[in-house]
Amino acid sequence: MKNIFQQVDNSIYSNAMTFLRQPLSTNPVNSDADIVILGLPFDMATTGRSGARMGPTAIRQASVNLAWEGKRFPWPFSLTRHTNIVDAGDLVYSCGDAAQFCDLVEAAASQLLAANKTILALGGDHFVTLPLLRAYAKKFGKMALIHFDAHTDTYSNGSKYDHGTMFFHAPNEGIIDKDASIQIGIRTNYKKKDHGFEVIDAPQANDLGVEEITQRIRERVKNLPVYLTFDIDCLDPAFAPGTGTPVCGGLTTDKVLKILRGLSGLNIIGMDVVEVAPSYDNSDVTALAAATIGVELMHLWTTKHKLAHKSVNK
Image (cartoon, rainbow, N blue to C red; front, side, top):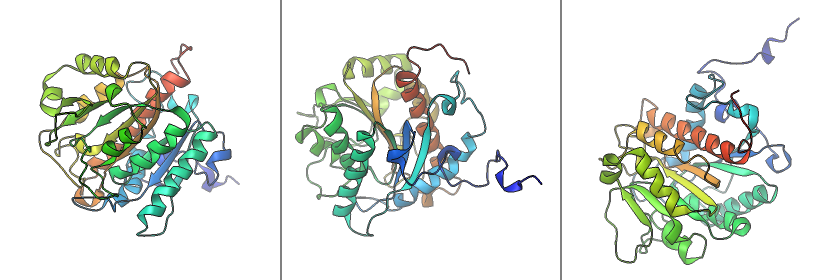
């Protein structure tokens, strides 16, 4: 008798338990994965509306809408045919213990990187990027940062755990090179004097062509290893209302996807998508945007690290 419980599920609503329906692994360090999905359900560093701790689950559920294609349009290859992906689930920490959370993120990421895995982290508020960067710096040294956001997150007057301070601390800790880093989509106030990062603000990004934006990014990061972090509030609230600190005047989903695709070939070594707060979006478009961006990032990684010397169309 055929085992009906082992049938392949191609629906867009059932069994939405892992990112892109990829296998769940409780031992990702010793798996054959190239990329490990890691959920970071943390929002104790928010300064606006809370709820991003529910982001990883929402993103996973939305990702099922992207799993049926085989090849993700317009990429010419099947991601899962060329890259092994596992979902490690969410990092577990003692509720309310921000210090422990930081230590666990850095430790978990360090173990995965030591095993030559790449991480796609799903936030969680944007503070989660700081302990991730600390782990990456141990392996890669100083990195370039490509940062999509409505806010620079370079503010020095926040608390120790504040999702607006990560890119104040990271350069001061020697983790990222501001002179090789760039921020796209910024549309809130920041101190321009001694800022260091190149900024393509949202009005500029909305007016410039995609090719000019991607060329400026490439010229900025040069040949350094690149960590790419995407705060979903880079998108205009019309495209991503489910976030803690929405700011009008952002980028469209279409333009963001075109910019990301234009970065093919960069040495992207780490990536995250953060700040999805699903309770503020009853239509799930924010989670779908985040899932789509995550899939695009994995395609970027694959073109550089798995397909750079291959000709593929499958």
